[in-house]
Structures are given as C-alpha cells and as structure tokens.
Image 1: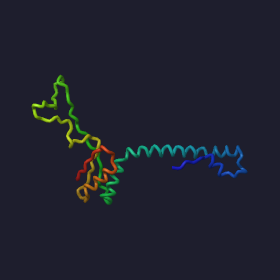
Image 2 (image 1 turned 180 degrees about the vertical axis):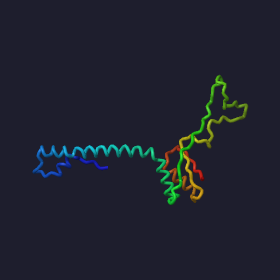
Image 3 (image 1 turned 30 degrees about the horizontal axis):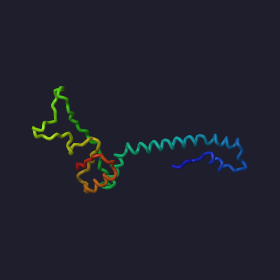
Image 4 (image 1 turned 90 degrees about the vertical axis):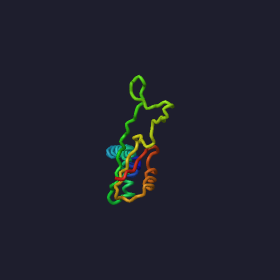
Length: 156
C-alpha cells in the first residue's frame, strides 16, 4: 500500500508565493479528517490481511480445488475432521483398565495407530461424478498446506 506524506502533499499543492504559515495551518486543519481516515484504513487493511491468512485458509483451499477440478459446479467441500477420543493410561490404584501389557503376554504396546488422525486436519469431500487424479489432487494440496496437517480425500 502507499504512504502519503500529508505535509509535503499540502506544500506541493500550494504555490510557494502563497505558502504562508496561516494558510498552511488552515490547509493542514482541512486535511486532518482525510489523514485520519487514511490512517484508519491502513490499520484496518493490515488487521484484515493478518486474519485472512488464518481464518479463511480452508476457504482458499476449497476455492483452489474447485477451480482446478470442478470449475463448473464448485461442489468440492472441505469439512473439519472430528477429533478422536484418546484413551488414557491410568494408575493401578484407580481401578481402571490398562492398555499396557507385560512382555510375557506377547502383545505390543501401542499408543498410536498410523491410521488414527490427530484431529488437526480436514476432510475433502469430492462428489463421485468428478473425474480427477488423486495423485494430482494430493500434490496440489501438499503444495499449499502447512507441514504436519493431515487430510483425507473422500469420494461421496
């Protein structure tokens, strides 16, 4: 965005012969409101751009996928993923079942399954009528999402 030096703006508009202190002060008073409005606009713009990067990233991704794979109907949607219920490990005094086993029981200690989702990602719902390449869609998504965010493509 552009920055305006309002004092120089006034001096450039008034001829040097007419640049008297009273006249410059009067013009400075007249331009005070546009100056304030410009400052408020720049602050609003900076705040809006900051929040746009975080709040509407899902909408940007949805728009990108619709433009790439379903430009006519715009039916690809992105929904938040449901978080899983994490199973807690309890103390023996709490009389709750434990999910850790002794080595003699020949059962592995598993705290996380790779197919479980952490809950930080999203689900992309693609209608069945759309012809697309899953690999191409995954490559496009991986190019724009943050590292560590998981996602799933479901054909509905």
